[in-house]
Image (cartoon, rainbow, N blue to C red; front, side):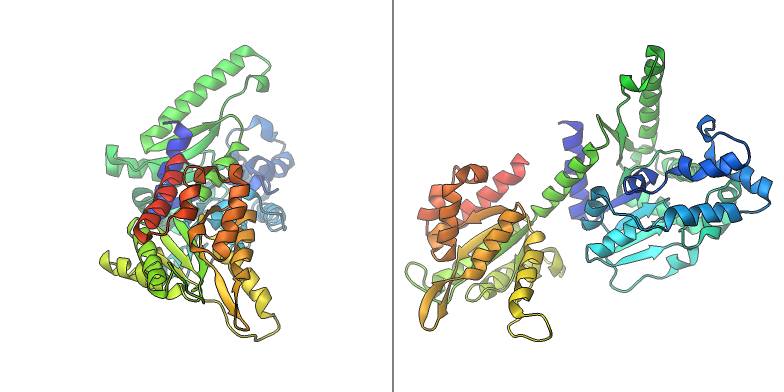
Length: 473
């Protein structure tokens, strides 16, 4: 298998299994406009007569500055100036903090990670000081370990040789916690150069403890480009050095994903998010008027059996508790959850009943629109079943389902319209047929979605469509 595709598959498994972690380095923050290490140190080096471009040990340069100025006031000013300004988050940060990852580590001083988690309606528990490891924030969605401190406390930030030498005394528990996570979780290192002495020490300790039983982790490296060098010999030397460096990282269980350009990271992260979402299925449906062959008993049996089978196959059902179908969808999912012998309902069922009355300053229709988009955004697949309502004694197409279809299209969700169930689903089915090239995954099944009404056959058909898509991607 292609190395990139193999990585995506393994990391998605880690995310879905709840054991994925991210380690964010300076490269991730640079993409948002923050300074990298060299630019942070540059004015300090100039003040003491050094050229940062000629220095390889930037930690030593920071220490020289501290020695010459008899303190770290200048260092603190640079940290505050460079990492407290407001910058625009980039797509990589948005995706990484949108994914259901629970553990983030970083050596960066900025707040990009925790801000991204909050922007995606998740609650971070940020650990800056060692004492904070002793407690956790209630109802947290993710933990952010800032092992080198934060710009809001610049005097405690790890930057000089003194700071690294005293790390064992001031931040020992961060090392212990990171060792534990490196043993139990699958890390993706993003924007990290592997030049940090702290991480080198921690990785070596884990390797000594586990030997060849090291867990596999991943990082991104850009391929060495010929145009970056004036001389062929320099290019050959850089390639040889990178090859040796990549091989050395394997000692710690870290696999390097080689990229032609770092812009490919965004494409890879999007693919990871896309595959993660394929585990989530939003069922859109409602039924107020029953008719043959879809009488009330058959509708209930279909909805119950469909959600039960999907949960059995490991999918997570998202439901807005649609009239006439919602209870059966939920009952089917719950029956299978209990059969699995687990109480972890959230892993298999996300129930989001719609508010039924106006209250407050926002109209119910506006709330519903935002509510629908939020639910559908969490899903990879959207299944449309049935779709009618009774208005003033007349049977009408459920316009809420049509709105959900428009949202699903806009968000590029995989749409499965069960046209044989009539109502809004039939109308959605017809639009899909008219634009079938945009729904490539349905081409071999589209006719059956309109003609089949047998409950068991229809459920197997839907299950096959979903399964085939997950194999293709």
